[in-house]
Length: 290
Image (cartoon, rainbow, N blue to C red; front, side):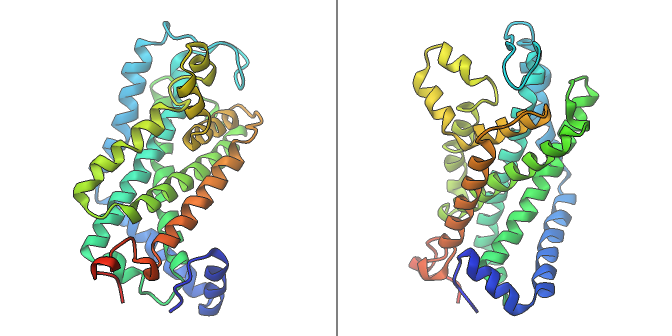
């Protein structure tokens, strides 16, 4: 079994084992995650309730207090609930990506990850299949939230030709945040440590971004250090790519930042899951896979 985790080696190994075999393995992994998700109705409800509370309560309270000026990508003044929806979609992607990280830690403790990664396929391909399953679930939950948001009266140009570009941005953001969750699962050794670790990832990423307020507001208020952190936050670029795509505008560097960070997160995760480096630290304690 090849243990090299670089992407070229994964492609070479996939070709050696046969593309149909590799695709069958991906299909099995994705279907397993979909089946598991279909049996967890509370997971979907919680994924929708969290952003809907922000939309129905927080955005409603600031609807007329926090006005958004005419800046790109908007051609007119918009209410705050319209501005906040791309950020709330990003919240759905972020939380599901982190929840997938929790599931990876759980599967590793139960031995399921060890069993999966001993399959006769490149390790990077198996991890990529897990990432695709996570991203698919993230996109489905995000689309469900968009539909519910539209039903309660939020005006979004999602169901237009620009919506196709927005769907690409949505999938890219889901892959990036899923890859981040995959990377975190390498270093979170126990379930008990997960909550504390997530507090240092989810909340800084979300609040130090353009999900709730535009960058110029941060700079205008004098919060220069928050402004700089938000500028370099990859979550900001995922939200802005989606925001600009919805209105058919050029997102600038955002797609390159999202795709570049997603690739870097995934490569580092593959490197961390290499058994020669301890399978996320397990082998150092004598518990690595064969």
